Length: 373
Image (cartoon, rainbow, N blue to C red; front, side, top):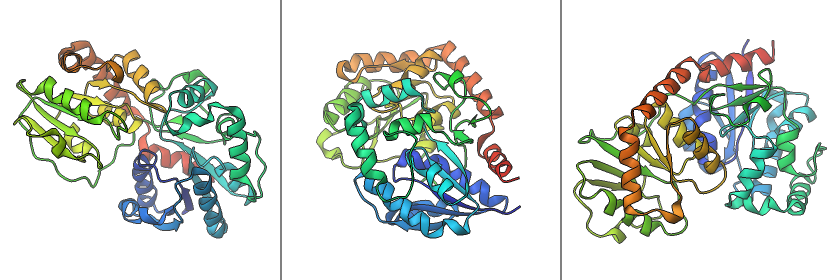
């Protein structure tokens, strides 16, 4: 049975990239997908093959959610099912208001009360919601005029306490903290999103290779990158270092011959070659490292990154460092330690076997199709 599916997401790179493979699989088996995102994401969404529908972009999350909601209401009547990412917390209510079935997507670990507290206490943009009153006032403003009634007065509580019947989580149950809190019939752990990326090719490098990418560092970036140079400049390795779109590489001066430094890299293409990955611990990066069996040195900052880092260490997939106390020596020691650790390699191999057996995007399609049968 062909379905018309409305996919609603917000413009955060890590919340979009895993979903591209799912949309491709849905289209492959004959379903029609409309992907709703801000107008300036049209080119990126084109990779999925979905019909693009744009809404006005806004840097304020509450206004972003409202813009997406109202645009979705213009077209939802002609769709059979709504897919939405967890941050679009009104997705379930939108579906119920218009009599549609829905499926929620988690691109980070699924969230219970303990994890939500950990996410907002780790700092970053979500830190303001540590004050419950601010969360309540923000939520009431975000849903004003939407014609819906929330179960909870705070949007973070709404995410945790009012789940839809079907949730797809882009990690393994073995990686999920507090996994026992997420019933199997309601939360489906489909594993990392594995699909062919339209990534730029990356040249074959002299081995062994270490990749360094910490996403966007807002403070102290230059000092960190200099520490990386000091750590590995005299070592018999190749270092690929991604410094972020806004960083001026010229600030680092003349770079050692064994360094390849770019503002951005095609990360999946690079990870296929590397022996160790120094990462901030975002879910996409951790998942890609697990898929390719790469030991990690995780340097977490905000949101889910500290939680992901703890899981990496708990499962024996790498080491965790504190950004505030990093030195060239500690970076070098940690990277070489995970490269040489046989137990880490064995643990990664087991994780790769789990990923191979996980439902993946094709299994997620079967789950979605069962919703309307």
